[in-house]
Length: 112
Length: 112
Image (tube, rainbow over all chains, first blue to last red; front, side, top):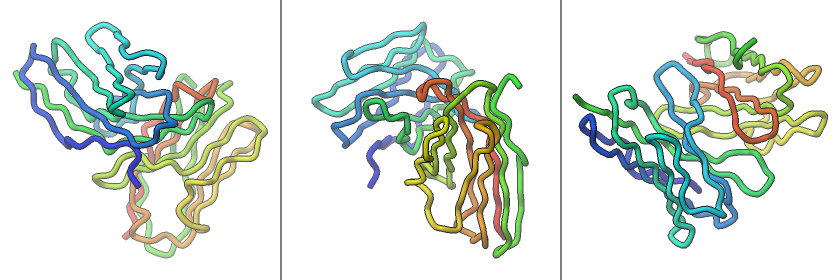
């Protein structure tokens, strides 16, 4: 039972354009959401998070949007840069529990 | 050290052998997690240690898997009688508060 889903395994975007990565979840108890970025042969690194009391959180070129009614969140990267090419994982947790449930990842390729 | 350290970085073992994977968390981090990523899959939760509390072992896939955390610091994940389906990247993460993980680079386990 995949509680966090990333339905696009890959995405290719031109440098300078917007990258939009999507994530859907099924567990309505999730109230904290995170995005991680992973380069080959490295562990995932934290990118940005959002609590369910918000619908948007922004950090530089990265913005996360949360639509609780649709159980959907998205990560926007603008402008996209070649160094953004990596696998992006969406993750969610419940209340004070710190165990994260991850999606399967989306591989982003930013082309010149 | 400055980050989460995992060893070995790569391990090839024969089916049926036991393996031990080590994780050195960031000093002072009370929470420690093990995840694994099989080919084409997301990060699968295995086990979670928080301070002196009983660990959350709900993600361990079988009784061949066990983990210890000695002195609230170093953790060892042991897989007995390895099977080919155990082949994956095993990732350790630590956190000071239970959220905001820092991951290690992982151990790539290949069972032949």
